[in-house]
Image (cartoon, rainbow, N blue to C red; front, top):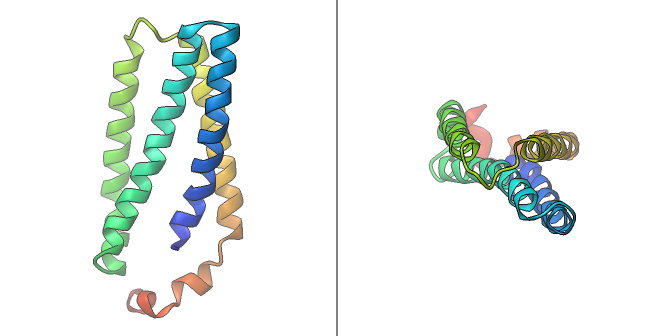
Length: 137
Protein backbone atom coordinates (compact mmCIF):
# COMPACT_ATOMS: atom_id res chain seq x y z
CA UNK A 1 0.00 0.00 0.00
CA UNK A 2 1.33 3.42 -0.91
CA UNK A 3 1.83 6.22 1.57
CA UNK A 4 -0.98 8.24 0.03
CA UNK A 5 -3.41 5.34 0.36
CA UNK A 6 -2.39 4.86 4.00
CA UNK A 7 -3.17 8.49 4.74
CA UNK A 8 -6.57 8.56 3.03
CA UNK A 9 -7.77 5.14 4.21
CA UNK A 10 -8.22 6.11 7.84
CA UNK A 11 -9.81 9.44 6.99
CA UNK A 12 -12.31 7.77 4.64
CA UNK A 13 -13.22 5.09 7.15
CA UNK A 14 -13.75 7.47 10.07
CA UNK A 15 -15.53 10.21 8.13
CA UNK A 16 -18.02 7.80 6.55
CA UNK A 17 -18.40 5.94 9.83
CA UNK A 18 -19.24 9.14 11.70
CA UNK A 19 -21.33 10.76 8.94
CA UNK A 20 -23.90 7.95 8.92
CA UNK A 21 -24.89 8.21 12.60
CA UNK A 22 -24.69 12.03 12.47
CA UNK A 23 -27.12 12.00 9.55
CA UNK A 24 -29.50 9.65 11.33
CA UNK A 25 -29.41 11.65 14.56
CA UNK A 26 -29.94 14.94 12.70
CA UNK A 27 -32.87 13.37 10.87
CA UNK A 28 -34.51 12.36 14.13
CA UNK A 29 -33.86 15.68 15.89
CA UNK A 30 -34.05 18.37 13.21
CA UNK A 31 -35.78 16.72 10.27
CA UNK A 32 -35.05 15.57 6.77
CA UNK A 33 -33.48 18.82 5.56
CA UNK A 34 -30.81 18.72 8.29
CA UNK A 35 -30.10 15.05 7.55
CA UNK A 36 -29.79 15.75 3.83
CA UNK A 37 -27.50 18.70 4.52
CA UNK A 38 -25.15 16.63 6.68
CA UNK A 39 -25.14 13.76 4.18
CA UNK A 40 -24.38 16.08 1.25
CA UNK A 41 -21.62 17.93 3.11
CA UNK A 42 -19.92 14.68 4.07
CA UNK A 43 -20.40 13.30 0.57
CA UNK A 44 -18.57 16.23 -1.05
CA UNK A 45 -15.55 15.71 1.19
CA UNK A 46 -15.55 11.91 0.95
CA UNK A 47 -15.78 12.04 -2.85
CA UNK A 48 -12.84 14.42 -2.91
CA UNK A 49 -10.83 11.88 -0.90
CA UNK A 50 -11.94 9.07 -3.20
CA UNK A 51 -10.82 11.08 -6.23
CA UNK A 52 -7.45 11.59 -4.55
CA UNK A 53 -6.98 7.83 -4.31
CA UNK A 54 -8.22 7.28 -7.86
CA UNK A 55 -5.74 9.78 -9.34
CA UNK A 56 -2.90 8.38 -7.24
CA UNK A 57 -3.63 4.83 -8.37
CA UNK A 58 -3.92 5.90 -11.99
CA UNK A 59 -0.54 7.66 -11.85
CA UNK A 60 1.04 4.70 -10.10
CA UNK A 61 0.19 2.45 -13.06
CA UNK A 62 2.85 4.14 -15.15
CA UNK A 63 5.88 5.15 -13.10
CA UNK A 64 6.91 7.29 -10.15
CA UNK A 65 7.39 10.42 -12.24
CA UNK A 66 3.87 10.22 -13.64
CA UNK A 67 2.44 10.12 -10.13
CA UNK A 68 4.37 13.25 -9.21
CA UNK A 69 3.46 15.04 -12.44
CA UNK A 70 -0.24 14.25 -11.96
CA UNK A 71 -0.43 15.84 -8.50
CA UNK A 72 -1.11 19.41 -9.65
CA UNK A 73 -3.67 18.61 -12.39
CA UNK A 74 -5.45 16.20 -10.06
CA UNK A 75 -5.72 18.93 -7.42
CA UNK A 76 -7.22 21.27 -10.01
CA UNK A 77 -9.73 18.68 -11.19
CA UNK A 78 -10.71 17.76 -7.63
CA UNK A 79 -11.24 21.43 -6.73
CA UNK A 80 -13.37 22.02 -9.84
CA UNK A 81 -15.50 18.98 -8.98
CA UNK A 82 -15.88 20.06 -5.33
CA UNK A 83 -16.73 23.67 -6.21
CA UNK A 84 -19.21 22.53 -8.85
CA UNK A 85 -20.90 20.25 -6.31
CA UNK A 86 -21.03 23.09 -3.78
CA UNK A 87 -22.54 25.46 -6.37
CA UNK A 88 -25.20 22.92 -7.27
CA UNK A 89 -26.02 22.20 -3.63
CA UNK A 90 -26.17 25.90 -2.73
CA UNK A 91 -29.43 26.42 -4.62
CA UNK A 92 -31.18 23.20 -3.61
CA UNK A 93 -34.30 23.69 -1.49
CA UNK A 94 -33.60 20.68 0.74
CA UNK A 95 -30.26 22.08 1.97
CA UNK A 96 -30.36 23.78 5.36
CA UNK A 97 -27.49 26.25 4.90
CA UNK A 98 -26.32 26.63 8.55
CA UNK A 99 -26.42 22.87 9.10
CA UNK A 100 -24.60 22.25 5.82
CA UNK A 101 -21.83 24.73 6.62
CA UNK A 102 -21.38 23.34 10.14
CA UNK A 103 -21.30 19.74 8.89
CA UNK A 104 -18.91 20.64 6.07
CA UNK A 105 -16.51 22.37 8.47
CA UNK A 106 -16.64 19.61 11.07
CA UNK A 107 -16.10 16.91 8.44
CA UNK A 108 -13.24 18.83 6.85
CA UNK A 109 -11.48 19.37 10.19
CA UNK A 110 -11.98 15.70 11.07
CA UNK A 111 -10.54 14.55 7.74
CA UNK A 112 -7.56 16.90 7.96
CA UNK A 113 -6.82 15.83 11.54
CA UNK A 114 -6.99 12.14 10.60
CA UNK A 115 -4.83 12.66 7.52
CA UNK A 116 -2.26 14.55 9.61
CA UNK A 117 -2.20 11.76 12.17
CA UNK A 118 -1.75 9.10 9.50
CA UNK A 119 0.84 11.19 7.65
CA UNK A 120 2.92 11.26 10.82
CA UNK A 121 2.65 7.47 11.15
CA UNK A 122 3.58 6.63 7.54
CA UNK A 123 7.10 5.23 7.01
CA UNK A 124 7.99 7.56 4.13
CA UNK A 125 11.63 6.59 3.77
CA UNK A 126 10.86 2.90 3.62
CA UNK A 127 8.16 3.48 1.02
CA UNK A 128 10.22 5.93 -1.03
CA UNK A 129 13.25 3.69 -1.44
CA UNK A 130 11.55 0.43 -2.38
CA UNK A 131 12.65 -1.02 -5.74
CA UNK A 132 9.57 0.36 -7.56
CA UNK A 133 10.35 3.90 -6.42
CA UNK A 134 14.12 4.04 -7.10
CA UNK A 135 13.79 5.77 -10.46
CA UNK A 136 12.50 9.00 -8.84
CA UNK A 137 15.67 9.37 -6.72
